[in-house]
Image (cartoon, rainbow, N blue to C red):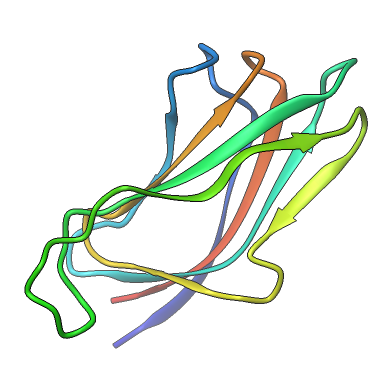
Length: 119
């Protein structure tokens, strides 16, 4: 198994407010550990942002299939401010799991995602 550290960044994300945009999808034969996620407001007024984990895998020793969950829901980000979610915690993504971002204003949140892919 190889561990590869990566950064995924978007200068601005969400072309259309209210429609989540895929930030990252775990490649085949890969497990990804999310190490950090920073959302920065690049707008001239406050915005709100949401982060979804979209998963259709099963895990945790249970037979039920995972579902879509929010890691962050409509969190306010002040003008010129940023929001670091997870704050030292980790999230594991399995093959095909993905992170989606939404913002209350189109193209007004900048994203930096730090991950480790295990192949």
